Length: 122
Image 1 (cartoon, rainbow, N blue to C red):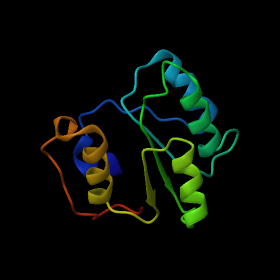
Image 2 (cartoon, rainbow, N blue to C red):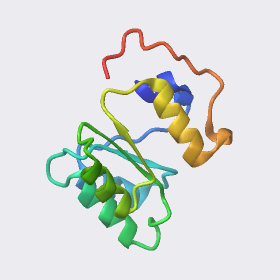
Image 3 (cartoon, rainbow, N blue to C red):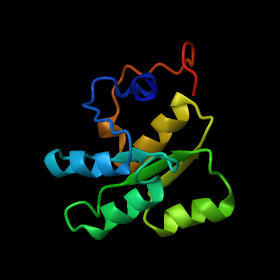
Image 4 (cartoon, rainbow, N blue to C red):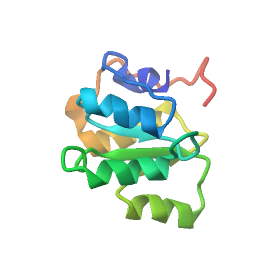
């Protein structure tokens, strides 16, 4: 819902319940970017970043962390492991859009951006 509100509603979006599921999805599907939380069962976001960055086929895929884990040491740890960006919860659809545009560029942005947070609980 947040990506749709940020103007990416027409993009193909894949969803995984945890890091291990995300890695399995990535084996069969090309992705332009990964967005992950830190706190997930089975494999957390930090372990996911490390797994993505150690593989030749996926190491260049940007990973964005969206989490409540917002202390400076944790953010530095994510970035040191290869995260391309970090957003602390709560966040706005506009913050997501701006970060994606920074990472992927304007060409990936869809013109139907709706910056209202009405109906969304981030």
